[in-house]
Image (cartoon, rainbow, N blue to C red; front, side, top):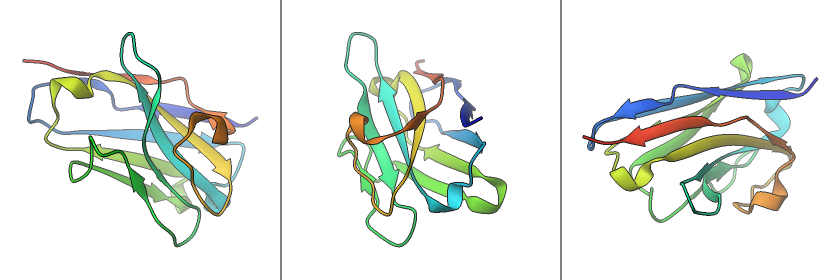
Length: 124
């Protein structure tokens, strides 16, 4: 059974850091492009970052460039999103996603597998 499970969300003060993790099971992450999305209250889900299964261009939304870093550990079947210099506008439910592909596309319809989401709240 294919499954993605996120964890690591929580409450953090502005300027703080948080690392989200996503555990994959039922498939091998090696050959999969991976992504992180987020959805704030009253807004559509947006692509935050994605990276292909092999060498290629990693995408970051303009709003998170220089602050967020996507990474993966294929041996552990894990993906991560390191979030630094967090702002209140980063508050959202964050989702990990995966698709067996050589490239990545930040659009929601591209992705086959989704996690259930983890809440990130940035507030003083």
